[in-house]
Length: 505
Image 1 (cartoon, rainbow, N blue to C red):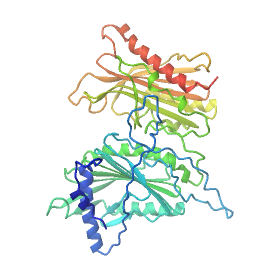
Image 2: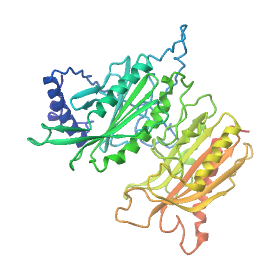
Image 3: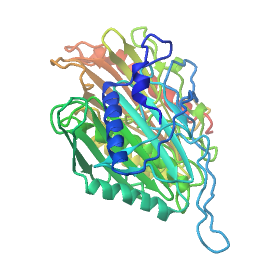
Image 4: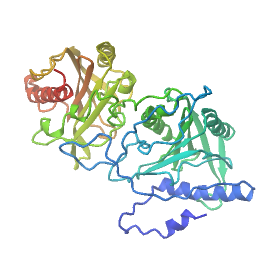
């Protein structure tokens, strides 16, 4: 078997296109090789998949805009079919192949300049070693593996398809049992000669209620050594997806990585419904928790229902730019992902004004359009969203959120040749991006969140600008000076809602 350490020894950082693995992943590779040698000497037979990595450059999930900017390539959403219809014997006919356009890396968000994602059936997937046992990978009828080797968070993800749901459940049980019997492990031939490095495996509760089963755990050194892994396995029907996120964290910080991995898995699980016993007829809509635009299920809406960057009002002559998938909620106050509102179709898009000198976003606009099968369903979803604006649970917020102005009814104007907005509400919150001011400062993002309903569609839009301690473009002693900022917000709302309903007359 090819020794990956040899590849590292021959690595030349100046070669074109070469990007170094993160230190945590290099360290794990070395430890993995030593563990495998010990397992082989003990008589354990291991199988290895030889990686043939190919470039992966599908169109970004949020689709192109009139002002495209470089973004991390993402695969398109699959168009599944009902392959699990019962056969003549009444037994479920499980899907036997993974669609070619399955978006395996959906939900994984890394710096587009620091990662080069790849997906193929032949490359390395997720390998699990627990106290000398290798419960994963398992034997399957089809597989797809992907990797996003960013420097900060190195992701591997693998999807395995089994003959039946029972076999998929058995494979996941093997992982769960191995984990239960290995709370701790000791490495005597790790990267420090002669030192014993203890690791701890910590399990977490099921964080993906949409899946049939979930197994999540972290692996970290018990001392202060850096190099951690978060593993999450989810099963839907006869398919099991395994995600491994490696970072340079330690035992004290690894727990903070679990919610990020779980959020990324939400959008993977949404696609995996095609492998269930009662499969979805199309890929479900996903929220901008991964920034991905959903595939149109039945022609309700498409990318033309999303505003483009050139239509948004500039801030101090700084234009907006469309960005790639963002692992954040559309509205900071959301109490759940928008996909949980069960729309029949959904599209979303994100825009930023970024200051490279400060390494911060001077402005953020997130827009999402949800289409429902009927007006009643849209009304129920709107009422849920209104509750979010009023209470601001901020379940997926990046940091603490303060309500500046409570939710109130507002007017959003559209052109006279389209259906009018039936109702709209708006709230204002303030929050500070994580690590923006490590030593403390008055700057924060002032966000205006707006929801609007037009028939069976609900539009979500947030317009945030960096300022402080007063609102953007304003004087603390003159409330009337907020007008220029609020005018930009009003224009944003009108352009977003106008694009969302241009085809409704």
